Image (tube, rainbow, N blue to C red; front, side, top):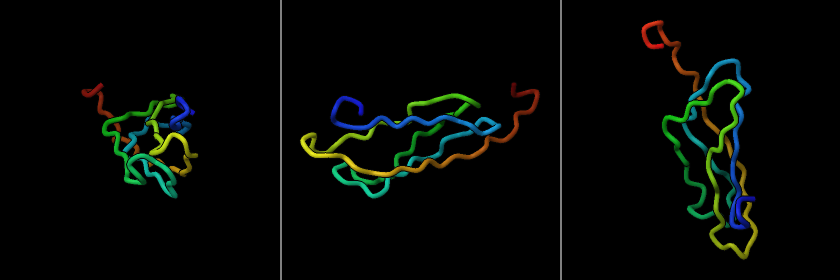
Length: 85
């Protein structure tokens, strides 16, 4: 719980390669500020073993419970050539 008004979503990359986070999808939302619209944090690179705060989901009405499920959408970035390192 963030400050009593929402939830902080954390993500850890346990893949063997770095990943790019392309979207976060909220589902089955109840009392979520903004509803279940896709959240798109562009350009978030997830290094191997890293833990990242992805977003905070706030309650539309802080006096009522908040409920949702969430999924992340990632892709493996193309391999870097020696010139790009």
